[in-house]
Length: 388
Ligand SMILES: *Cc1c(COP(=O)(O)O)cnc(C)c1O
Image (cartoon, rainbow, N blue to C red; front, side):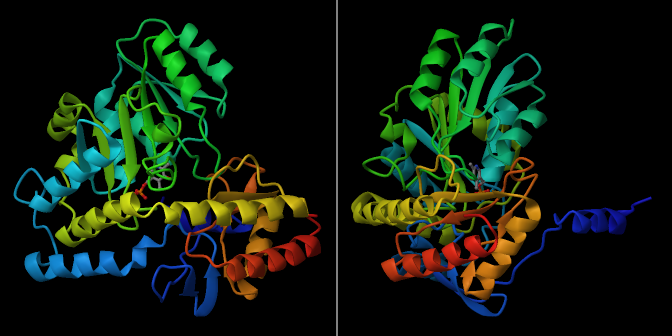
């Protein structure tokens, strides 16, 4: 009945079986993984904050004062005052009236979307949006329209003939997690106005990275008063765990009352909240981290392009190297590992069929020598595999 072994064998035969790799070091630009010292070329810890001494100190202090687990849901007795402090800090940082912290980006998208819309409503979603957005929409039972990636004309056509719905919501990643490109948010906001829709953005890969003050793509395009809901994570550039939602006070209050992934789950540990507060402060105070990150990304990407590799329209520290076939991507990754570089192959269904790739990410803490080393090995392997 449960022929799971068989299903695993099918995945294996297609080269699509996933496995966990064992990390035995700190999460940083150099790691020990699967027993080997490697250069880390796949972390979302863009600013290196996951091992920042001031974050560690803040977490240790919170553990000394408040212990480990939070004991209950936020709606019972788990709503530590550090939540209040963090949410005030995030609202101030993002220049929004109010914010709310969830346990993860996945939980946030599921919880927000599934209670904002229902059968009476319609959601327009970029085809390459994150899985958590898709799952949130499916859970909501709203009418679900996916528009081709960043295709404003297609989105307009869908909005135009969408018929009668109570609420219309357009949802988009701002920086796309597998392609590293940026949503045409100014145009999306214009369409939303024209067709009476609201916009929700997922800034998971933009928070702490984009915008003059690190607030994300909404800041980058100067759209802060145009967005209904901004969500982002505390798990990527922020270096911790959790997610935030920024919106008006009524929206936040509604989520506190309705969002099941907030209500029916235990609150985050105080130590994570304390470290996140410190991370947001560092992001506000140390813009040079972002500057170095973008210099590294530019250096790395321009060299990959010079080699003739397909990095799509990457405009961020996420730099895909698309190779197409699954077996090629897996072999590329294996050879990189043999050379001391960790970057697993990204395969369908995480990316569309025929778009298997290495999703490379650079960090602010990568040194020039790290990137030069990686470029040399990548060039050699790509050549051997006939990709150049
Ligand atoms: C990583 C990611 C999430 C999920 O965030 P977690 O905190 O890892 O659960 C949501 N949206 C996007 C675009 C992401 O890249």
